[in-house]
Image 1 (cartoon, rainbow, N blue to C red):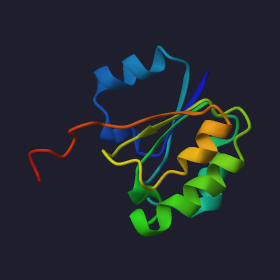
Image 2: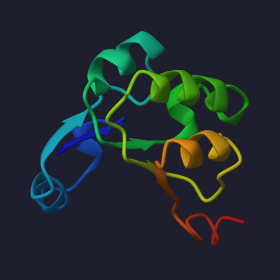
Image 3: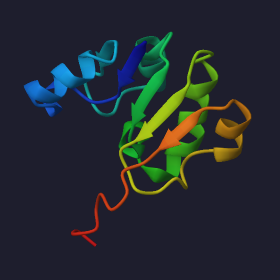
Image 4: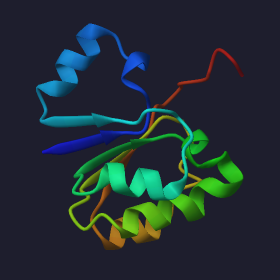
Length: 112
């Protein structure tokens, strides 16, 4: 299984990297925000995609850009959101393609 995480490897502890590696091939982005074509190249063949709206320039741009990325990933089975909200994901599209979408409930509760 290929897992693409649109975060640098340095954002994860050694223990977290080991746990992720047990799931399959893990590919990390070099930077949180990159041009969409770079994410498309990086994620080619991925089955699980870990994303944040910041990867795509914030919530305002994320829905369209995430959709463009997902359309290039025919093997995509899951999207893991680094956010509490699903509002920037086209859930009708993911449901139609049977792509599971998860979030981080209560991730920013203390901040709010």
